[in-house]
Image (tube, rainbow, N blue to C red; front, top):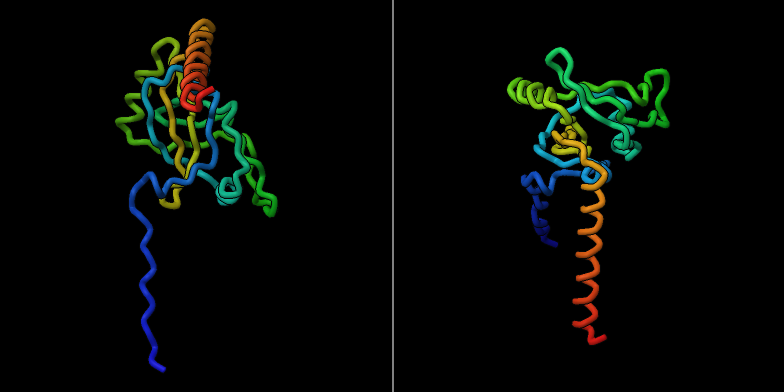
Length: 170
């Protein structure tokens, strides 16, 4: 019997969209804030934090970022302790340093000093094996702005229902 060569395995794509594995999203951020600008930053993590993130035990609900002494810190991010960790386990709500270029940090310092601007994490994901956070420069929405957004969303949803009913012949 002759041996046949098997086809080579397909290489994974190098496109960033396909390599991104989202771990957590802050769905309430787009409702509560008007997004002005978006940045991608790395996070300085400990070993058990990475393992817990890969298991999906993270919450972005109360997280925000601050700029202190020329460094950007992510505060309020809750990463659950790793189940199989020992005495080396991490503190769940510790401040974590964000890794940005110096020019981006300088830009953020100027923008966050303006009244009403804040830094909010939108999502947490793995890209090429590294943990990244999508950080948004945002301005808080007033109550009436939130109501308008809800009314627009409801009107759009109702219009789609009517179109769907007409297509089906109801």
